[in-house]
Each structure stands twice: as structure tokens, then as C-alpha cells.
Image (cartoon, rainbow over all chains, first blue to last red):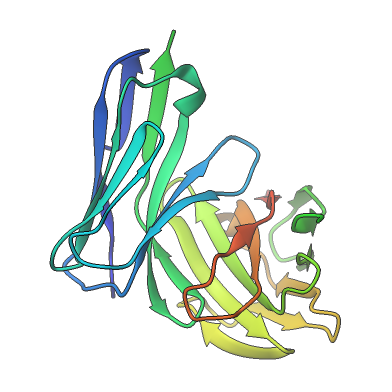
Length: 110
Length: 114
């Protein structure tokens, strides 16, 4: 069974702070995705990383795929209240089959 | 383009009953996947349908089943409901141009089993 462990589980910070969320597995994934989910809605895709060592930036969000394609991180610079939500990493294990991480719930207070 | 729609949005059932949930994918999308989300287990893959055929299946008991129609709309059915089936059921569709094509999620159906 391929598992994705995220840390931390919960994060409560003040606006303007930086944070990093980690996604780790003992399995290798061909690609890994990060989603954000807000209450009452389905997850929304933020980014897909494919190549080991790849770094992608999306405004204040920086995503990194580990060299061995077993882990990934999400770094948010100068967090804003609008960043509040549940962050999920997910890896493809088969055709259109995603394994989701355990999730990190982020609360950014003004 | 309209997003993925799921009906109903909320449902309350009692143990032993059965339930059918519906998902309408984005127009043109032929792949539909179903996921169960609970606080304890997180988001877990149920199954995926493409062109009316189940292509992938997760580790759920046979009480969970699904089907896809020729217009790509999909339904999932849960028979003999248990308290542990209380969850948010999410449907996702993709255009299926590749194995890691983007999946677009609907808002989910929240099922409560009493």
C-alpha cells in the first residue's frame, strides 16, 4: 500500500509568516500533485510536479519534488488569510488513480 | 464551461438502507473517479470509470459499486449502509488525454448514516 504522510497535521500562523508543509512516502511516484480544499468544496489542483528535483513557483507558493520522487514540500511565503484551507498532496499510482496524503490544515489569522 | 456537479449535496440515511449518488462530469470529459473523504481516513480512491467501464478500483467492500452511462454521467451506490459510511463523497472528472491528466473535483455529497 502506498502511503503519503503529511506534516504538520495542523498549522495556525499569523498573516505574513512563512511556512512549509511536507509530504513523504516510502514509495516512488511518477508525478505528485498538491491540492487545496476549502470547506464545502472539492479539492482544487495547485500544481503537478513530474521530474525529481523539480521546483515550481506559483506566486507566493513554491513546490519541490524530491530527487528520488518519494517526497515533496510546499512553501508559502508571507501567508495571507486567503491561504487558509486543507492542503493535500497526491501521487498517481495508476491510470487516473490518485493516492492522497493525510492532509495539512492551515489557518492564517489576520 | 460548467464544472463537475454532484447531487444531492446532502443526504441522511439510516443503517441498512442503500443510497445512490450522482455525478455529472465536465462536458467532454470521459473519465469519472469517485473518492471517499472522512476525518479519520482522509481522501480514499473508490473507483474510476471510462467509457462505461470500470478501469480502476480501490480497496472498498463490494457494497460500494458504481456505473457510468453513455453520456459519461456516473452514479455510485452503497448498499446496506453502515455508520462508518458517513463521509463526503467526491467525484472528479478528467479529459483523459493521459494517465496523469488533471482531475476536476465536484463539491461532493455529504452522506450521514444514523
